Image (tube, rainbow, N blue to C red; front, side):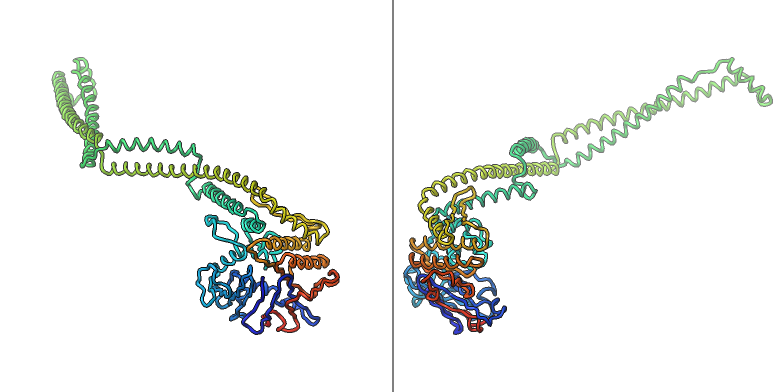
Length: 580
């Protein structure tokens, strides 16, 4: 319960609250301008101050950290489960919270000095979670847990989008946060919602890896296991074959010299062979010429002689036998020349054959060395190829392992998810009484406003806890806001039976935007009755020009519950006493 809200600036309007029903009323005068109305009087700022003192996060020069509020310190006097505390936080040093009062036995990271604790924001939130909601550090392995800031934001909604749905207090609130914190508030097994979100995270991670692999960003899981294992078997065979080659490989220190010498011998043998081929063709030609050369007969010589004598009678003086002797001598000289050339060519061929034989034998010896030995460079290349194959094989092993893990992870995740849902449904049924109590209270609240019971839907679906509310004629802004009102009031009613308990519910005037005046009057009267009956504190900020004065029940006097009256008659009429 909030006892009072104070500030170190004299212009600030201190407000003191009482147990039960409390109203902060903003009066709008006839002389107020459009600009005055737009600036506001401080109802929302009052809620912002409460959150500020109770550990809300701060962002730059926003909210209460604007330049005009530099040097301001806000103080909250509270009674939390019978423990009176004074909480102070300044805009100049928002990272530290000062807690005075009954703090001697509080567990905190800072030792009390002169009955005062100085806490960081995180430590203060942890302490408030323990004091108001009984949050402890049990099961620290759970990643998704209810937090004080989220739970408190359902009881003191601070932004306009907080009134869109009963189950969320911010437009960007995560689904797991909604499930975990609403389950906690309704006394359900919130742990199941947290564990389910962890399974969703694992599934999301696996799907992300699979998607990255398909897009070529990750090679760890490309292909099927069958294809990868077939490729691995092929590489294993290649590795064994290359290893055998390396194991039997003998390096010759003069391998390159021997290789060059063998190549030179091959070239020499080719040249000698080509020369023998050329000489062989000449030999065939010369031998053919010897066979064709024959001595001419007498008749042939005589015939030639007569032809010459007819053609050149004055030149022919020789006798026929002289001509024959000349021709025989000419043939003899030709035979001698051809025979000597044949002998020369045959000698050259014989010499070359001997050279070819010697070169061939030497080359064979060199090739035998080359066949049984290798070069160091070649051995190094073989080693590199072998190591590359091993690296590829290891990469395939990793890919197969990753794929197995992926397949196992998905299968295991589905099994864990189903088992968790089975456990959640079983324990959901075991807590039927708690659930039905919340449903009955919500239905009673909605029936008090609309003469017909609404319906609070709480279930366990495949995606986790499912929450919904139904009120007849729902769909308009006013009806939707009343869903939030009935739900919040139900939470306050439920938590008065629990210890520890915040014992507090605060609504800004936003919750009544668009609501029929009769429902506004009935809602305020219902909140007043239930706060008095159950023993929790209800604070509501209202605008005087929207008060459903004519719709209140006879005997209900709102004025007796007004704790602070703000006005737009002057700049000093607002909560802060200044305009900026």
